[in-house]
Length: 318
Image (cartoon, rainbow, N blue to C red):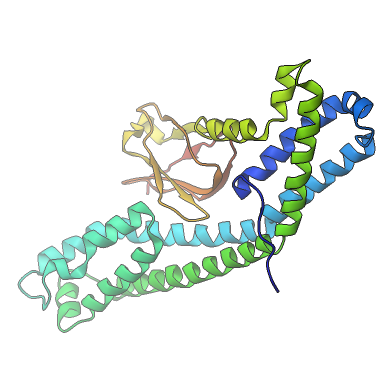
């Protein structure tokens, strides 16, 4: 089956915003436009709204987004657990120097820490495998056990490695399925793109000499530019609560993009308040953590363009 070439001249994720704005303008101006172009009946406007709803479902199919969020959450939990154990593992290696069959750098712990903290999931999974292979090499395991490294910790790291690797594959499969679903509906996106361009031309001809502001409301190029400017204003904010009035400056809020990309770290103020402006619209898995306080339960947050989002976190002592 040949996929129809996509005609739209904006990012796919921007199309619902553009069509939504055109539809709201059309609802406002339907009676005026219908006097010049009789096809703009109330039924036409209502049906256009239904097409936009169907478009949103195609571009952001809930069942896939929800599944990908759940898978990403499992990866985040495993990554955080490993990261929390790295300081102890590093110390075991340091104390075992002289009895190990591998130099400390051969355990790849610094590389592993970087991969975990930046959200490089593939690198974290492969590096953890290298770390475990080194631990199992020669007399390394016995040397580490002599310093306190336990079979339970070793089994736990093995399980986390399997969890990360399996869920990376599962996540990729779901993202690929979603992409195929979207691509197979290029015809639907093309149809609505051609429709909004036709509406744009009609409306601009009506308002060109009478109402420049309304004419601009149908200018697709300007709408896309406005959407991209609004994205730079997108904000997340909230409060981190710790017991006993402990300073929140040592807390790290971690946002992991569900669709891939590097983690975003946010540091709260001493009073626990935080904010970040300019986040790309996306679905994120959010956690907060601090030494001695563990990690909060993951939250799935959907950040939309120019819509401030508040998310609060409460940390309890371990």
